[in-house]
Length: 255
Image 1 (cartoon, one colour):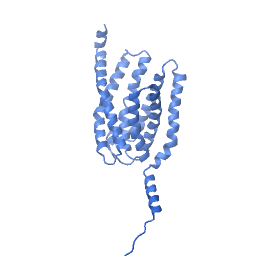
Image 2 (image 1 turned 180 degrees about the horizontal axis):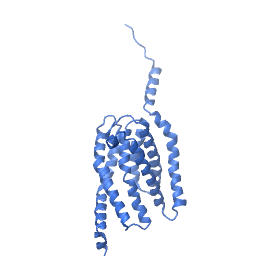
Image 3 (image 1 turned 30 degrees about the vertical axis):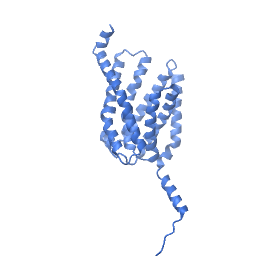
């Protein structure tokens, strides 16, 4: 009989090499860009706060930045759906495309900026929400997997956010009781319920059921769904309130 001698050093190097392969090369490509983009989001806030919208609050400027990010995220998310809307449920747990990694990296840089802003402002609920979101996005960028469901989740989260932030913007601009503000609130509420509580749960279920997804991706999806359900009751109240206002009930009640 002949025996094969195993070199311990070779074995250790093989394990290290294998571990390194779990890091997606595209994540290295976007690492420096993410740091720069985070700074750019912060600079955008500074320009809004101290140049463009000086007479409004810091929250006003932060929401303008959030609206810009929402528009960017919606666009980049949608273009990754190779089969249109059905593409939202394709390749769950599979390898990322470069477009998906880019989309997640851009949004991860924004959420890093906004997490800092919310933490400094004491907005605990938003900090928790951002931590769930960032955990999933970071896992997708670093591991090079789960891009399909993470980008789909990002799309469903962001599609109602322009209307959400415009609600506060309109209030500061003195347009709280205008028809435009009422229509915007109704659009926000309907899009939130449809995207997060109708389309979202099947996507979260497929994410949880996939054996290829990391636990942090599953936890992030479930956490965002839980927060959405928590907010759902308040959203329904907004719908009832704004429908009454548009039908004249709100004015009659005030009188």
